[in-house]
Image (tube, rainbow, N blue to C red; front, side, top):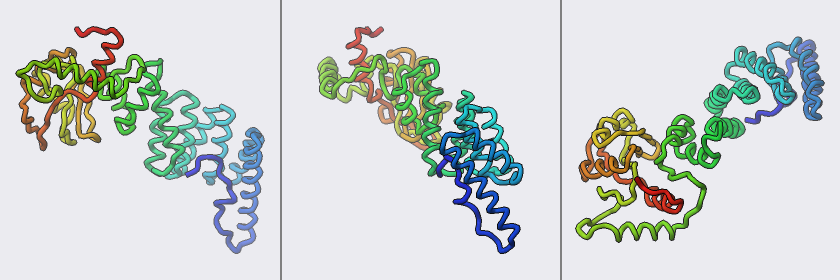
Length: 314
């Protein structure tokens, strides 16, 4: 679906045999063409004047309101654009462009949460509308990056992890030990550096400890998070919290059903260590699945970043 101006002649129905109906259709077509041309020449005021006359004659034509709303938006008269969008929603509730225009106007009025809902509605009606998808992503990024809380890069990564669910993305971003890793500052570390750090960790392990450092109760990464695997849709934050609160005070829990996992974030690394020590190594059957735990994949990289930036573990 294209969300720019609608050319009336491209969607005019076949004319009936009656001469009066032919004249009516031609009149609507002519007015639509004139307004369309003026808008294409960026004469939005001129286009609106023609559309005002057309709407008086044909008050039930959705395309006229769509085009006028578009022109008002281009003139930054967002309240008027919003009025036309609301008229369209009331008169033509299944007309996809109604919600798109409302979303555009709301963005102009800086009512971003309401705009987000409008673009979601467009995609619910027409999942192939790439323009609405782009607008939705832009609005979500603005909401997440408001007041410089997060960088655009962080927000994009969190949105991707959450399958573009903004509230879940915000939950992920609010955690200091979330799945996409340490975010302060933006420094790239090569795989070789990370593997070198991993070797150091392995070498520091005591001789009597054999196995995977990601499951080591001594917590060689000083990580305050636990990764939980085999998480089905029956497993929610409310289900996980009493299980993992036994090991320490939980800061928050991020459930990612699309990746069949969750992240339990504690206030202290010692709490994650306790969970790793006391949680059954073979896993624990909860609801309809056997959940297992380990430290997150990002644990080595987080530990390396902290060291590189002179931050000592407490």
